[in-house]
Amino acid sequence: MKNQSSKKFLTVVLCALCFALAVCGLLNVPQAHAYRATTTAKGAVLMEAGSRRVLFSRNPDAKMPMASCTKIMTALVAIESGELDKTVEVRPEACGVEGSSVYLRPKEKLTLKELLYGLMLQSGNDCAVAIAYELAGGVENFADMMNSRAKELGANNTNFVTPNGLHDDNHYTTAYDLGLIACQALSNDTFREIVGTKSVKISNEGFDYPRVITNKNKLLGRLDGADGVKTGYTKKAGRCFVGSATRNGMSLVCVVLNCAPMFEESAELIEYGFENYALKRILPKNKMLGLKTDGKSNLVYTCAEGFSYPLRKDGSEDNKISVLTDTENGKLEIKFDNELIFSSTIGIININD
Image 1 (cartoon, rainbow, N blue to C red):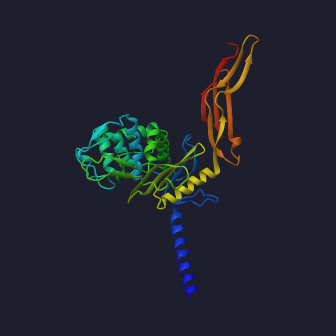
Image 2: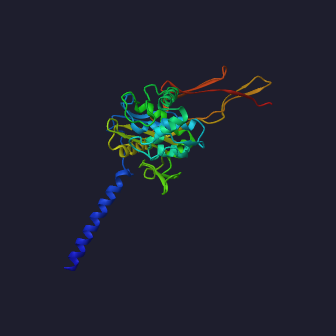
Image 3: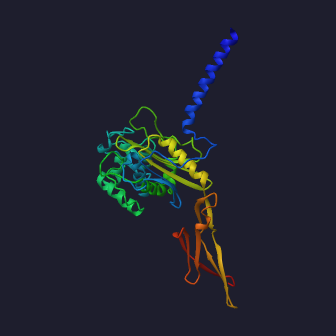
């Protein structure tokens, strides 16, 4: 009788353990299977951050709302203003904004960087409005700044109306455009620092408790190399997510728009990218490209810049790379499948000097 009770108890414990492991495993992508390039997202793109090469896409140019993923551009514009330590006095217009909030109070004082943490970690819609009023005098003017920056990045199918992504029929992007914006933002060290932070304390002026901002990005700490960037949700946009991870010097950015299992599918796509692609050195720095001698001088042609490009690990794309050198005119071009992906100037060194 005692043995039967022990067996029943052991069975219950094992079942409970299996259930717990299954739940934990929802965001821990299995390590031993071929990852698939597939998604249920209405729009998606997987992009290598340095080259902006698209490794996978689904409806990449379809215009759709992006909810709080808008804040990637809000943060980029704010960071590029160069006033991160500036003290901001919160305007009444930034208080009581609907949706996600850090509950700013009128005349409360925080630094611009603290507002950026509230914006990107806790998705504070109020922080977005506070930033817009501080840097541009209002939401409309700040949206103009966002749109101007988007055009500079080649995000030509994007239009911003708000700094926080609350729904407006004229506020939209595409998976491809949002990927371009995220890649640019991630090239900024301050942006990377902010979006890679799991939690941080900000000023608690007027509050009688510590004010801790917690990141909503569930891939941080659960996906190898995860380092950004932003979640989003509205009823019309659905669940949206831009995720990023870096391994062995290669950074991947994944955008999924209107995707219910946004974390799981983003993790799968990112794993697919790392499993199938690697950065390959096409041109080493200071590569000697040729030697010319006329009996008096020995001239070495070199390119100071190096260049790497994401290619399939199986080597099936290696023959699509071509390096074209024109020493007479001092030009170097690298093409992938006959499309220009890199150009530079060729320098000359007189080794007799």
